[in-house]
Image (cartoon, rainbow, N blue to C red):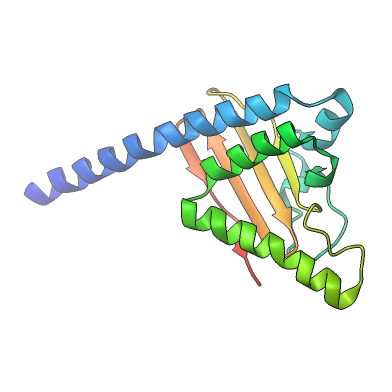
Length: 163
């Protein structure tokens, strides 16, 4: 019997720890979207049931979504706030370290595809506390995905960090 209460207590503790992150994630996604021009919104937002949600890669290639390269400084700040909410501090630092390696790869390869600003944010559906929506941050050696369901459940898969 004690074990049952322990499991219930742990489940409740985990559930309450996750809900604020989802609320912050929804707010951060909405804040980013509110700063975008109509053409940028067309790039960043796709339907939740879009096949693109399952089309992920970690190699340098053309992607759907809005790249950092096409954002203003204010929009980038909002985008990185969303990424901060989605990742732990260690995960965020790892993502930024991987992205910064594009500078080194560009020096070695002299290829335009090696660009730390060719990392893309994509939002699937409408960020809300009701219904299902998700988002993705993707570029060379990074593919991170989040799904929020009714403001109460988050899935963070697939998730890939490489380098």
